[in-house]
Amino acid sequence: MRMRFAHAAAIPALATVLVSAPSASAVTGGDRTQPVITRVKTAAAFDFASGDSPENITTNPDGSLTVSMLGVPANKPPKLVHITASGQRTTLVGGHLGDQITGNTRGDDGTVYYNVDSDDASRNGTWKLPPHGRPQRLAALPDGLPNGLAIDQAGRTLYAADSLNGTVWAVPVSGGAARVWLTGPELAPDPNASLKLGVNGVRFHKGAVWVSNFNQGTLLRIPVTAHETPGPIRTVADNLPDLDDFSFLNNRSDTVFAAQNDPTDRVSVVHANGAHESALTVDDGLASPTTTAVRGNQLYIANAGLNAPHDAKLQRGTINLDTLTTHPRHH
Image (cartoon, rainbow, N blue to C red; front, side):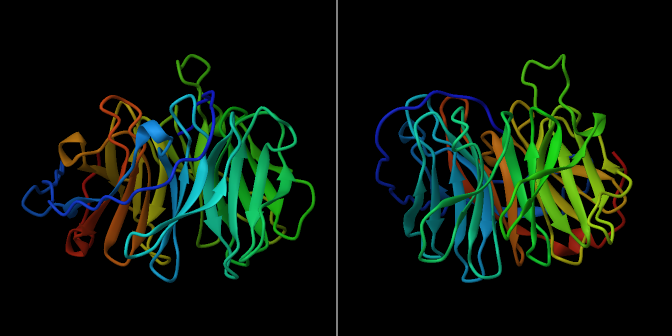
């Protein structure tokens, strides 16, 4: 999810807060005796007043996380933060006032790629941070709302969502101009919605680009052809209101953990056949969930904390793999 805010002054220091008390897990429409996600707890708490509102997560091979911080409320800059497995935080990139850092992803060589939404045309677009290097813009994007970001398996192309213009952009990792990869009504925002957000989250998975549409509440799969053009769009699941970003159980499974932002405030499990069920709700401490990330049997949830009391945090829960092998119900 991405909203436009104004920003102000310096980047504050980060403080680590670890909370070990687990909360209850909830599943609606399924077997409550075997919840999909258990042992949910706060892994890291953030200071919303300092601008630390998590938007996107990438898991790294060393067990660390790369987290985009939106930079809300209105007088704070965004940042890109590295969090080690032990909880130590480092600011990788400090953003400019008036900007927001949204989606991020990682190349095999350790390069971090991220989207910047800015009213300044010289900063709006997709950026990269090479290992031990300095941030540089990889490709400019037109005025819109750069949001989710994914890299293909070959590491050649980045796919960037533009939530306002209902477009997926293809950005060459080697450099060069971005091109419109796909646009159309399936990716567009609802013109009657109070918050107009279309295509939002993006993941590259098993030869296809998967995207979410926030306003339409749909999860879509678009195969990538041999010519790297989009194939036919398939609606994997619908009736997922406020669908923000998402992640897959693993590289082989089509099971998705979908974050449904405010006001739905839910994490749903979407099965390969399109059936879905609620796995976590506000009763589990969700506070404007923006995305999920999976490492092994651990699920991470970013909570932007957009509403009072602004409980911005990163949660971690354990995935009950046995519940995902049973035949899912349709909802």
